[in-house]
Every structure is written in structure tokens, then in C-alpha cells.
Amino acid sequence: MPTYLYFGEDEFFLNHTIKQLKTHTLDQQWSNFNYTEYPPESKETIPQALSDIMTPPVGSGGRLVHLPNSTLLGVCSKEILLLLESILPKIPSTNTLRAVRC
Image 1 (cartoon, rainbow, N blue to C red):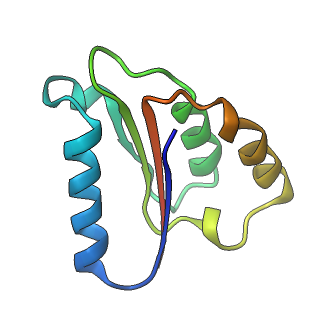
Image 2 (image 1 turned 60 degrees about the vertical axis):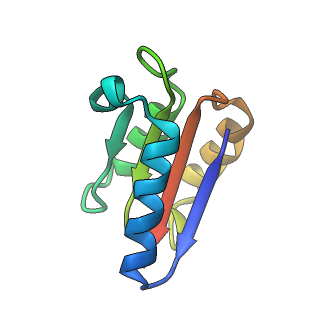
């Protein structure tokens, strides 16, 4: 399972890479079911995204979970880090996790 972690302020590059990932990962007919973007405002964003990334894609293509401006790359709880460590090897190979920290 690919996991992409981006850090920086180059909005053009960050937007370009998510467009590329969508094109390469998602089947157009199933993209509404298999693409999820979680806003950074909610406390439950990271646990929900980690749960979502474990779900196999619907239909054909893969699943893409996008965490823009995520605390996953900054300060997050030890529990979240342990959860991430435990699920990374188990994420379906069809799924892609993308976290960005600006």
C-alpha cells in the first residue's frame, strides 16, 4: 500500500500531486465512493481516516484517503502513532494514504 507524506508550502506541487494520485489510483466511475478527504479541524479526523484506509475499495480501482494539513506529520498522540504503526502493514494494497503538513 502506498503511503505518501508531504511537508511544505508549495501549493502548486501539493495540488498537482493529489491530481496525479487521483488519476492513477481511482476509477472515474467509482471515485465518489473511493476518495475521502478529511479536514484537519476535527479531533476524530485521523482515527476516522485510518479506519477508512483499511476499507477495501468499492467497485474497481483503488481507494485514496487524503489528509490535507494533517497533524499526523506534526504533533499527534502516542495512541494515534501506535495505531498507525500497527495498521500500516495491514492496509490493502489497493489503498493509498496521503498526508500533507503545511
